[in-house]
Image (tube, rainbow, N blue to C red; front, side, top):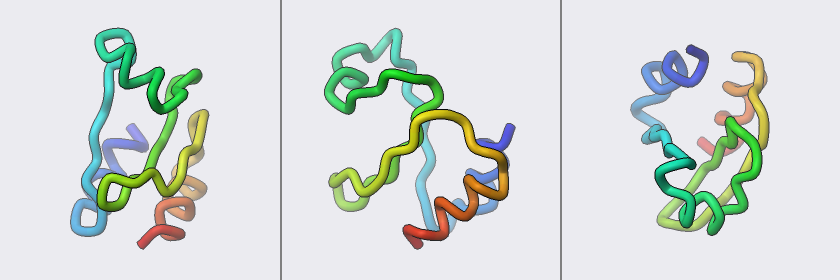
Length: 68
C-alpha cells in the first residue's frame, strides 16, 4: 500500500513500476535483486539508488526526496 500511495503522490517526479522476479529472473539477476521488496531509482537508464527491504512511509518518501 505504501508503494501505491507514493506512486500517486509522486507521479509528477517519478515513474513507478513493479517487476515480478519469478517471471523476470534474468532481469532480477542483472540487478542483484535478492530480497523482496527491492526499491530502485533510475535516471536516463542508469541506476542511482537501490534499497533492499520495505521502508515505513516517511522513510520511503525521504528516500525519494533525495533524488528529486
